[in-house]
Length: 509
Figure (cartoon, rainbow, N blue to C red):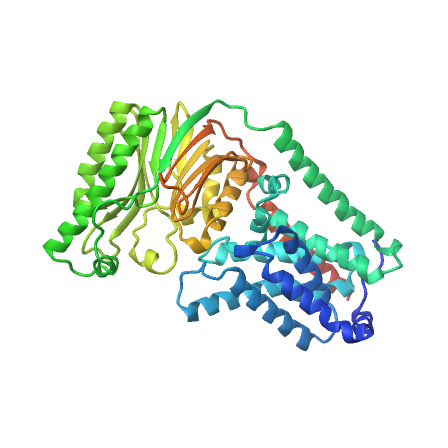
C-alpha cells in the first residue's frame, strides 16, 4: 500500500527549516486564491492555490495555521465574488464566512487523516473531502452551485466533458488530487521513488480525462440537423416609469389608477415592440423564438390579451414562441409570476413553466412558485424544455431535463454587470452534464447558445449589442449522458470512500 506520508514532526521540522522564507507559502497561497475563482478567475491559479494552501495547513501549529487559512479563504471569497451576491453587508459577511468554513473542512480532514494512512491512500483524502464537502454545500445552499471550483475551468473544453460523467464533483476531485499528489512529491524531495506510484496514478488519470474529453469534442460532435432559434431582450422603449413608482410596485404597495395606467402603458409599449421584432425574426427564418426573463411585463388582468396576441402571431408565422412573462397580481402576498409560456405553431399553449428557484432576497419574497417541475414538449425540432435564469445554478433541478430527454433547453434570463459573463458560463455546465443544447437569452448580461458539449454556437452581450437579439443554429438532438443516468453517484462515492478510510483508521487504532 506504500509508505505513510510525513507525520507532524516532519512537517514542523520542514517549516522550521524554511527560516525567513516561511511567509512564502501563505503569501503565495493567498495571492493565488484571489484569482482562483469568481469574477477574475485564472484557470491555472485554481489548480495552484490549493496546492500551496495545503502545503501551508499541513505544517506548523494547528491553532495558528488553520485560523490563518480561514482568513485567507474568507478574504479571497469576498474578493472573488464581489458584487455577485445581492444581499446587505451583514448577510454577505455571513455567506462568505459560511462558504469559507466549508472550504476549510477539506484542509482540516487532510491534516487529521493523512499522517495515519499509507501514501497512496493519503493522496485521496483531500480531493474526496473537497469534492464531497462542495457537493453537500450545493445541496444545502440557497445559492445552489455558486462557488463551485469547477466553474473556474470554463475555458477548458476537454476537461469540461468530465462533468457529463461525474458532475462538478469530478473536476473538483481532480484539482484536489493534483494538490495532494504534488505535496507528496514535494514532501519526499529527493526520495522520489517513495512518491512515484501515487503521483504517476494521478498523472495517468488526468491524462486519460483530458484525452477522453478531447477525443469526444474532436471526433463525436453533434451531427443532428439544426433549428434556427432567435432570442431577444426587451428594449427600453417609451417613457419609463419613475424609480419611485417601480420601487413601490416591487414592494407591493397600493397604487393609484393613474399609476397603474402608466405602468400598463409602459408594459404594453415593450411587449408591442417585442411582438413586432418576433414577427420580423420569423420572417427571417427562425423556427423558435423566445424573450429574456420577464420581458413581457404585464398585469395579471392583462395577461390573457397578451397571450391571445402571441397565439395569433405564432399560428400565423408557424413558429414556437416563448413568452417570458412577469405577470403582476396586485394585492397577492407574492404578486409576481415569473414564467415562460411556450406557444406551438397551431396556437395552443404547449406548456407553462414557472421559475422554480427565485433568487434569495427580494425576488424570492415577491415570486409565486408552482411545483418546480421542468416542462418539456416533443416537437419536429426535438424535445423542447425550459428553465429560467437562477434555476440553472441547481444541477439537481436540471437533472429533470436530462431524465426527460430534453434536446433543446430555452433559458430566459436576467443578470447584472457584476455577474456578466460568469453566470452564463456557469449555465453551460448544465448542458454538458445533462446532454441538452442550451440557448440562454440574458438581459444585462451575456446571451449564449451552446451545444451539449459546451461548444459556443452564438453569443451576444447586452452591454455591447445595439440590436439586443441573438440568432443561433442549434442541434435538434441531445444525448443521454452518464451523469443524467447515475446522478451524483461520484460525489456520494467520495463521501463514502472518505467514511471508509476513517473507519479503517479507527480499526487500526
